[in-house]
Length: 349
Image 1 (cartoon, rainbow, N blue to C red):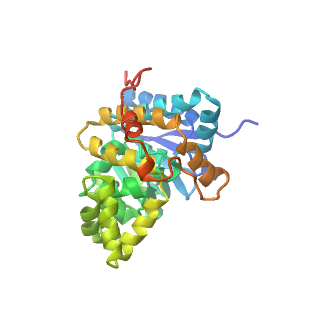
Image 2 (image 1 turned 90 degrees about the horizontal axis):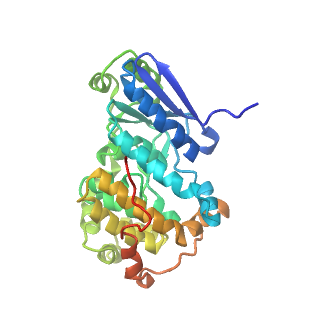
Image 3 (image 1 turned 45 degrees about the horizontal axis):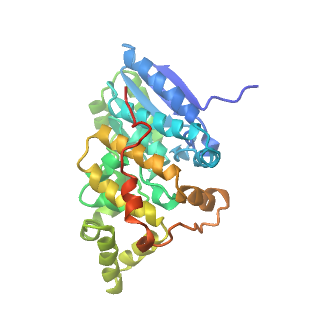
């Protein structure tokens, strides 16, 4: 018997429905899934009977917990060309979703991190449920927030995006809406009715009016003054200094945030800080091209493989970053991450 498909496609009335179908793996995104989704989206873009596309995840635990980083780790270790094929094709898919000519509705139900964010946050309507757990946790595995994070994170209110990028903070529905990462809150029990309404031809405005509910207070909003004060500083060192002074003054949140940042890859933090500054001034395509430069450099480095070892393989949660201290990261190495690629930039043609 053949294994069940990693992605399921369904035509239901006016809707084309994409179901990420690896529930035991929290619907982690594979190269094969990318290669199924992109052409199906292209076909539905040309199909006049399809008025809307809906993205969902199988099971109740996750929309998509990210890319299949164990496979990426293993490919990188042996120089398998599928490593960079994955990133190139994933980023092209992210861009296609961002520019999709029809309404694209992402049901952000359960865990939505990393590669899953790239499939959802660029949609026309981002629907958060009470089960949503959103994060861009890449600095904790020796990477940077990609899949369009260069674009959408700097456009979060105030310095929220810088905070989320560096700290990898997890957000529930109310916080995701506050940050501009989700649009509406819909209780999970009403998702089937929402899908049925879209399939019957309801517009995004109509389903928003009919199904949107109150997500409650956003804890992130209560932290905005602190986040803006510390994370709008002109350098990563200044952010850490500002947090340190507040922590010394007895601020528990600043102390906890410093502890969180101390566990991240120093190289990742430095690159991510500059990435967020650059992304604020770039259009979407330029942001994706920048990310492709960065991912090429990170896949040729040390910290990603060490981060995956510590978090996914050995699970000791004790990564040995190299360099281990911010002060020891060569500025030239950080700047080189942003330099043009000699073997070809990311193309959308």
